[in-house]
Image 1 (cartoon, helix red, strand yellow):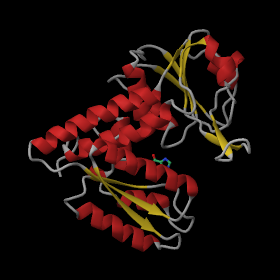
Image 2: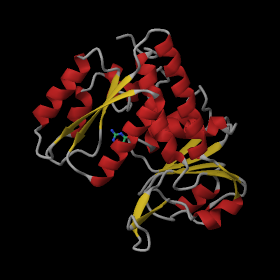
Image 3: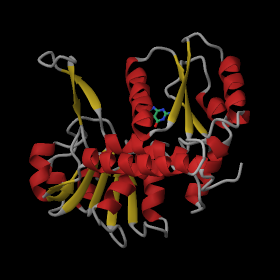
Image 4: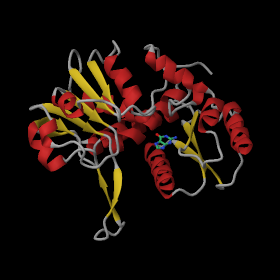
Length: 293
Ligand code: GUN
């Protein structure tokens, strides 16, 4: 059994990005610039955003935070997005989710210029991913595919089971696994209404789970030698820790790991890869890899 070490892989990618940005600077180009729109004071979102900004700094990338109060109106947020769309100094930007309930998330996402949508959430990027066109791909599925690639794990012709059908993990990772380029897998997507979940999981050569139910995947649901990728990160109260909670994955790691050929830990698996992929998307935005401005 080998650990898919997202922390180590992410550190390698950060140093690759830092190197490329250094070269851009030396070539007289300005450094890539990411903006983040944050609305309200959700603790987890504030932590994620702080981490994104810290990692930008580690790469030598510029980061700007636009932090709005939790009672900011939808019009105010959309006006800020329109300014970011037209600001030539901003290469890419994201709106941190979730948004307060009075704001329509989909309207906000659709206000983002798809050429600056480094989260890959805009319907144009989602659609282009689905039909195999170059586009920004959202960070978690891109991080999963990159982790598999860097460990030389082929998906071609393999039976993959994806547990979860969210727009930002389950659906896009299924699309990437089945597409011709770097995919070629046979993909089954399971969700809350699926039948025979345990049996389907047991047939998976590669299992990707993103349902947010701690330790749902037990050893008897795993095929011997499977590759297991755990996207679940649920905060479970634990007063013995200074933070007051521990992070648990969807997989009962201690019992499942001995049956696997490769497995991601939680934390330290896909999590650290996701911010790297956002940075990579921002670098690609600055280089106009997918779209001309
Ligand atoms: N909230 C949780 N994950 C994400 C993400 O990848 N992007 C944004 N914008 N919000 C999130």
